[in-house]
Length: 119
Image (cartoon, rainbow, N blue to C red; front, side):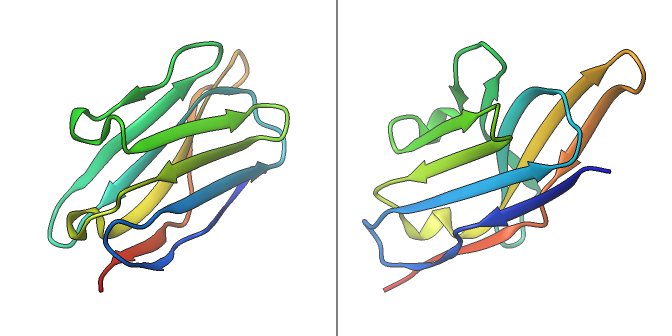
């Protein structure tokens, strides 16, 4: 059974930085790692993705401020967030995508971590 644990949320001042991390435990064949977020009153939105062996992609409005990285062997994905603004306040969710012959396409979500940008 796969379990996902997120770390790193909290309160940060505008202009500050924060790093989120997320680790999967259990047997998982990671095809892609990603981050999503859900701002108050909004639907969940995609932030960044890191395909296995591929190039990172970002939501256009976040390019240059957010950086996704990952360690497939450690089954961990990170999100470095810089120059944070009030509108970045959200619950951030990590996401793992798996493809296997036995189970096909499987997705796994973290429990979410709150990031609040406020002075």
